[in-house]
Amino acid sequence: MAVTSAVHTLVVTPELTAATVGSGLLPVFATPMAAAFMESTACLCLDSLPEGETTVGVRIDIQHLKASAVGETLTCRATLVRQEGRRYWFDIRVLNARGEEVAVASHERVRVDSGRFMAKVQAAVQ
Image (cartoon, rainbow, N blue to C red; front, side, top):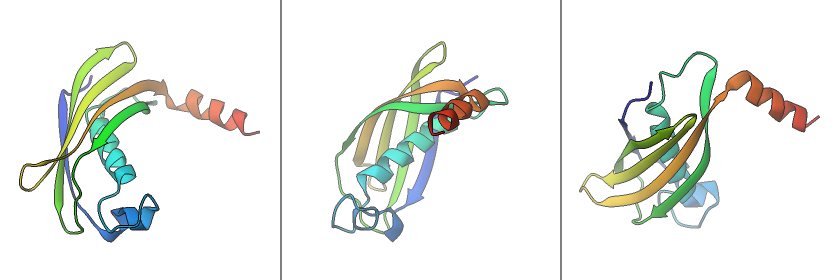
């Protein structure tokens, strides 16, 4: 059973900047790290799946709206807006401490059997 929303907070560190991860040259919160922050928050909504099951992200449509400096605190809220069978859709928003939207996304995840999924991945590389 999934919960309807989850909240996660982080402080922007130098390791999370565009200059460090290679998505740009400036020391601001990187878009790929924003996507990871958003996906990990969505996963918190699905932390009570049956043993041996997990979800994988299959789509994220992100808008990175505002730069965030090292030291800023960001809060992400993921809200489950729809579920059909093994598919889950989320609305996700990241806000800074001033309440300004930093990033927004729609995100889709699919529930999988962990063992079968990894067996297929391993078989594909051998």
